Length: 481
Image 1: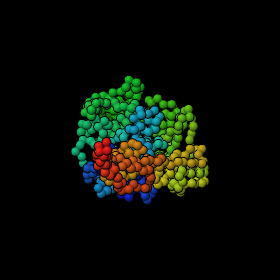
Image 2 (image 1 turned 30 degrees about the vertical axis):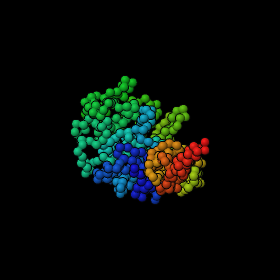
Image 3 (image 1 turned 90 degrees about the vertical axis):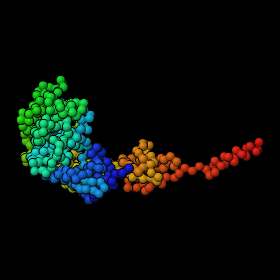
């Protein structure tokens, strides 16, 4: 059984974020910059030269894109005995696909995310690049509501040197009909996939459904989309145009599609006007603006659309939010000693007193070794902050002599040794080892304190002369009767 690495390149591995058919994504830390990262590696046996080429391409596109709604790639390389790896920013949250497992989104939340996604995709197209795999799985959403487009591994432009033997490399359910007919990918095929993503956010399903990939592809290529009877006719008309088999008959750009979508969605009128104003005044996103929902529910975050240099104006419920005057802020963290950043500018280590916050600066980030990075959006009334950092998960390598011992973490079986055990950061955790014929072994796990390598299990011995003693006792019993 192979163990997960403790380091990749210069990066320290803190735990596993996810694993799938293609590979694993690790939570890592840059020991030089002391920031959390995500590192993607391909599964063993899949690391051909094409993977490294794709990773390099993804890093190049990220460097050119530099967009607030696109994942930033920091590094790419190749590790001996592991293969190619890609180092990118860590987004504490989940994918749109994970969000959709709970059902469709409310219309304002869906539009908020779609505007962010559209800004990122337009920026990609402005570089002459096609993403070619737009789908909910390739959008991450942070806990604060920031959306990030990711996975440019198969993206390409006219200048790209990639060749493929397949008609397309994207996800079949989101493939445009012209791709299935052998046509080349275009911006229109990216917009088709974006439309399906928008439909899925609003309805929780797809208009081309089937029990198999073959059925889905046939319906995309030959049949009209199927909409639920409960969908408003005006919305049906918008999606019918956006999903026309003929690319020329579809909306010519994302903005015209989103404008019609906003016009027909069941939104409160001030919110609709706020979204339309945002689209009419595209700006480079540099911060967040908050709109309070009616009834005092949790604020939701909207990032301004990428574009020119004008200042965004957003209206919500008749209120106009503008940059406020400078104010002072005190920042404490539990534990202390966290590196603090305000809109990317270093402030020093906590505790901090009398930090001057100017204008719209509102993105506070705390980073500390052995803890998950934390992002906090400043509220207008914030003055004295006390923020608790969550311990990052850590890894304990369990190697036993002899191998094959059952490994239990807090009473739950995790497999057999040797094993790279992922340990939650919070609380105390006990590991217990069990193997037939050997004495059980247990200890409390501690970060930065490795287990013995190996843990030598002790055999269970019967009492010396046990069987022989029983026989002698039997014989003595016969002669003493």
